[in-house]
Image (cartoon, rainbow, N blue to C red; front, side, top):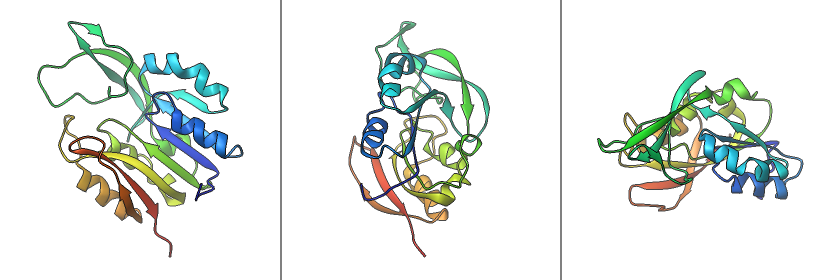
Length: 194
């Protein structure tokens, strides 16, 4: 690893592969993996925690409280485990949901900013809100990988340019990006030195 953070956070961890890899590669690093989908949390919890990762069933956003987590369904039945359910509704009129209440936190309410931190954020349309709730934590964040979209897949979603502008306001520079899907990609950002 090019970075040696004291803490690693994975927001929207699904099966927690990144968290497990970081904990295996950097055993002294505190690793926290957050998953809001109750089914994913229960299904993967034993495997994730067996790697020494702190696994938490929680939504991460720009407020602290309780919110309905929206699981997409067909005719009222939940689909199989997948990673693209959200605190936000999809930007179409046809998707139906099964709702589960979930506790929601800001990253600032969960973590102090006194440790060097790296992050991977895959929050299904809520990346901007996650960053808003981490303004203190971002002061000591070295780098992060974050999923963004150039088309609004989710209602009231902030687009990639808005997420990138917020990151730049916090002193980050975009170093790389991929092309995961049309209009959806991951960016790797690093805190500017100086």
